[in-house]
Amino acid sequence: MLSKLTARSFTGWFFLFVALLALGTVFFGQALWFAVPVIAGQGCVSGGFCGEMAAVLGLWLQPSLLLAAAFAGAIAFWRRGLAVGSRLWTLFPLALLLPNLPSLFMLGNLWGVDLATAFLFFPRWSLFELTPLMALGVLLCFQVEYMPGFAGSIARTRLYDSIPVGLIYIMSCLWIGSDLALSLSPHLGLPVAVAQDMRNVLHFPLSVAGGEVFAGLPPHGVRPDLVVPLGTLVNLVVFAVLVYALALDGSGRLRRAGALIFIDKTAEDDKPMFRPIRKSRD
Image (cartoon, rainbow, N blue to C red; front, side, top):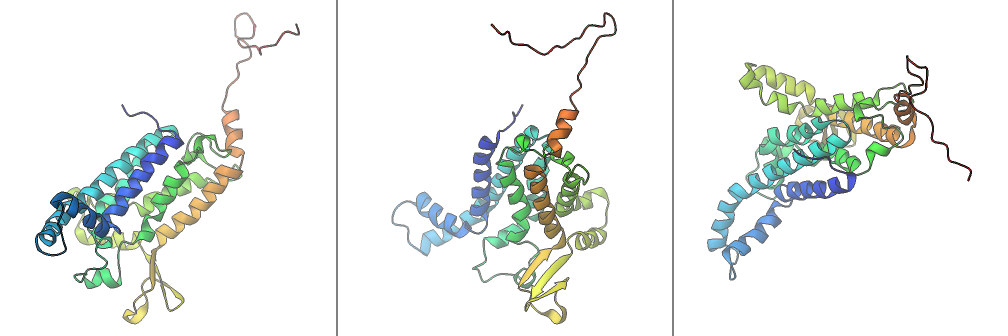
């Protein structure tokens, strides 16, 4: 049985997760450059045997790094989630990583010449879309369970004791992590065309081109400078409000105190069951 993780212990696991993810994506070329000479030994130069080894090694090294990152992230978020009232946070790294492994491979080959046009001009995946997962990980590196606005779980967090910002945040996480459910659609009898339409609706993009913001991709086939999914943008805005509610709003602490039931008397002898401990004056 996996135990709970404190904020300090989770920080080490989170750094391991980020390191594995970085080595499997944007720094994969550097990881391969370091791994090939280590395996081949001294005297390894570019081209020849080392070039062939790099091609073969890259076929299994990158998936191994990404799967290891997903595994480490799931374990870390699960154990930290036990401490903050929800073990379901383990689904967050799985939902954002596993269904999009082919797209994540593109981040490790940005300098290559074999990029497909669809990925080159309109990438489905970008580092910006990993920001919600990284933001939540950074938050869990702090002692969330002792913050003034924490009321037993993130889902119960309220702003000014009225706005359910925690529930809204969880709904936005389900929104951007919906690929995990959509990836199972062929096994659930859902037609691929319907699943693709649902994906397009859930991940509706906002794009920036020439200093203008467009709802969707720019018209006339103009290449966008930035593509941001609407769900990711909403998630980050709600996350900022959630952090404010946790760190500065004390309503969660009041609700935790109000949930403690104090039993004054028993029904039989009318004597108090609990009495405050009074220190003697001696």
